[in-house]
Length: 79
Length: 241
Image (cartoon, rainbow over the protein chains, first blue to last red):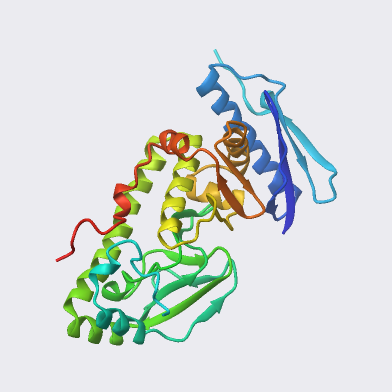
């Protein structure tokens, strides 16, 4: 298991100092997508809107960015 | 005395010296268990109950996918699986969170104890009913409070319980939970916990750092959590028959 860090950039920056263990990059990315969806939903619940550019930066133990996932990446709006 | 924290500040005074000594006498010598060790699994037959001398444990259920759900925290003085005595197996797992020290009470010795001291038996029953009251409160917390309220509630409850066993100094107590474990107890994801802790910190209510919680605004935290400690049955006001 490797440790991954999920830094949240929405109306403010919440850096993750503790991290979460995941088996590999793929699992960490899936978890990041889930976290983004939950934060987008929380924004809709609280503010009745969400900002597409808000995002989570997924970093590995070395501090390198694995990927960046925006709220817009995981949420679609249908008519 | 090994069991000095049993029902401490919670009707312990209602037990006689003889009853307290008899309870202490059935305990095994202390055993240390490292952090994050599962000590009992659901379904396993059990012939002893675990008394927590020091540290934090949790009861939990594993989800098929994703994280476990922590059902309760256990702190010093808790008989973590006394319900396993009449039930003979558990329907959930129990694990340490930080390093722990425990003593075991063999079930045959518990039987002899409560047959000789029926009042002590009723007090042991009372202690498991307090556990049930906490489970009801946790259902309320998870069902009715938002993220801030849930974490605030968990902190208020732990504060009150640790106060009773003399483990709060200057509004600060030991807190070995990771943000993931707070999430497992509050049905929140790690990112959500991290974000919520930041909100609580910026509101000046609580500071969590280096495995310690420092409560800055207890009354405000309790209001946010809709927390009143009645369900913990602390103090010595009511008398168990």
